[in-house]
Length: 385
Image 1 (cartoon, one colour):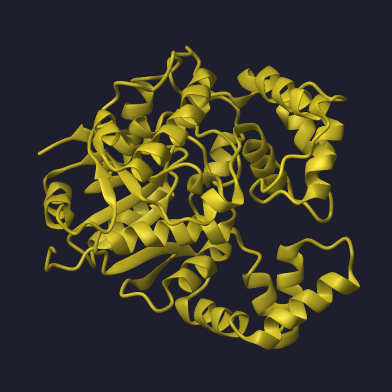
Image 2 (image 1 turned 180 degrees about the vertical axis):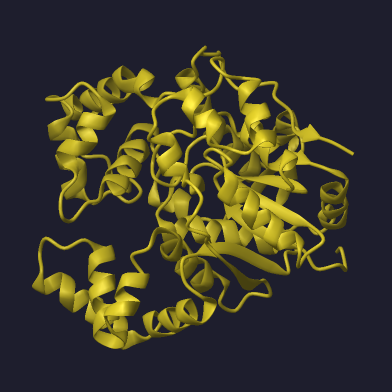
């Protein structure tokens, strides 16, 4: 393995903005190499990314990343805990000394929350709160339990977007060689959600760094910005077929029977993905939870598949320093590293099957591009000196 410490970041870059650039700049002050473990073409909140994974990876490379690896499907559209677990697994598999993440609070606050949350009595408190409040979601029950144990300020901390994932990263890192490294999030930057909320490609481009903008501009109106609504008929039609079969699918990830029944009941009354999500969102099920459930139901993502550790990651972009890391981990065999998609077909059965499952979904997702393509087949990593 490479003897010089390096840091990894689990990310989405949807799109790559000034806050991401700032984070990499801060990490470069502490580490010689920065590896980005980036979501594929579907992201954690249960939507399609604004552009193809290779485009987003190239933007990261241009803005300071040394190596961009894929957090593949289905892990990239999982709950916070499974998203973090899979990303941490890849980070340690490639020998990362540290895992960096953005957070709204300091590492001491996050570690204290995680310490309390790992206790048996805390889990019992969460279960009690859920039992006493039938219409409460798990995140709200978790926050209420934190308030009981640590006070209201800590309860507010666990609700902050970056802190939610940060706490899951810290939990997943427990007992591993890779150590946590928090970068305090600067509030002055527009967030990815705020940038996407403009719903205008040119406006989005004006809100991101120049070296990132150049990459997205190069595919503007051909692959950026992608529009999930272009697949409304696909999602609703598939769900209506499932509903008419009259059988509730079993073992669907993050989808208790009550939620599946709610989705299948609503799908015959609406005509769009967003309308379906709105109809099924309530005090128990957040909109992100519903979106992930719909994707899992439509594409057949099971709990068993999600609970397995990733068996591969794919190289999306690399420079000279990134290639040094790849060379160092090449013979470790703790995870398959795919440099070209075609190579996946010659690997072991488990990796081949997992890769083809992911590709099946991404071939559909590619139809959300402004100019739909048959598939993402034939794309290769961005490699620079």
